[in-house]
Length: 386
Ligand SMILES: Cc1ncc(COP(=O)(O)O)c(C=O)c1O
Image (cartoon, rainbow, N blue to C red; front, side, top):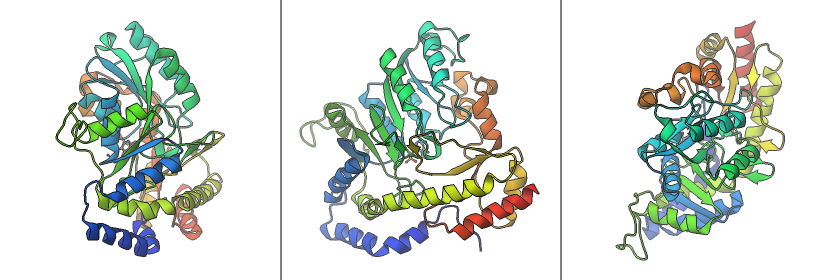
């Protein structure tokens, strides 16, 4: 039997009664858009993250978009982010006519490198690509914001990032699409940066049964603005429009799915930690692996268990032959994607991201994975490397 990469069916078996009851309640009251489950979910998400405002929306991508729109991001603005992420992180920058300025990642955490970020901000301010590789025409850009991504669930270095942001008057939008449930010095994802965005895509640590997302902020004014932008720039009533917005609401049925899942989420995070610890314990006995560092004081949400090895291809082939799936996140960093060709970056501009793209891969990871399954995966890898 093939081992699942993420076992959503095992989770459904555990939660089926509650999920069905919650969905039935929506079918009974019929408020499919902005029903009472949305408010309940938002309050519970805010309480979980330890932040004043949570706004449920249609996807992680729209969550990022709403946050950028609320900050008035547009043409001429430079937004600093990592190329070692999913396209959505930078796509929303370009969609608004602003320019992504890529900053390479740290070789240990795989998250944006604060020292490189410092150089990149200076380079944009001085219009000097000699200080750090910049997109074509970046000399005319104004630094506006930073989008750190908590890749695979590990929080970025927010102390360093916030210090740089304060010094240069930039906003910080935490891309917590993969890290909802993680912690940074006791602060949960959602409460880091000035505003935070997460995704409820089914494969995420907290996922619904379709597309979904949320934005978080302690800033009430910003929250109000994002709520308006999410509903076509709505003013004081439905057909009163103060600004250009989007249709970015979460469906009530998706909130009904998320509520029972949120009630077991903390326990599921512990189970993810158990799986990750077992992988690390077994794989550290083998030669040649680089593991993603979870810095002191941090907890990963373990969206993915990702490892680096120069013999990736051999290992992946052996896993495949044994019926064990593995996935490469991400084979092509954003700075060399065709969609961003007009930025004029070359592969060598971001060497750490390139190295990861060539050697990284992710193993099956979910809270319902047994120790025996982890042992089986590691056994196949040990044999492939023997
Ligand atoms: C880092 C990151 N940002 C943003 C997103 C976008 O989220 P969604 O698919 O919900 O739009 C994803 C989803 O994979 C992601 O991994």
